[in-house]
Image (cartoon, rainbow, N blue to C red; front, side, top):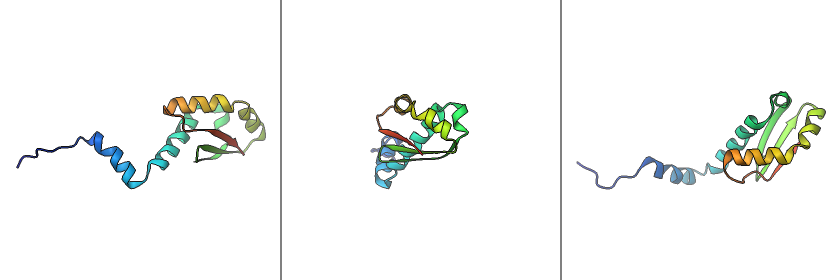
Length: 96
């Protein structure tokens, strides 16, 4: 039996993501991954945790000196992360 109507897998994936409701989690994962790639190795050892929620990336640091240094680089980090993702999804970075 031959199928006449076929659908490419590339067309099914966006529908699957929307149906399953996992788009928000995928965006959060890509923001955290881009943050790890953009962050300098001298600061990455001080990152305890990071969490993306509603356009904000919350990053908990173990060193106040590293936190203050990164606070001065917030806008540069935000631009690099958004350019790496290809969308303007990150609105603010909050260091704790």
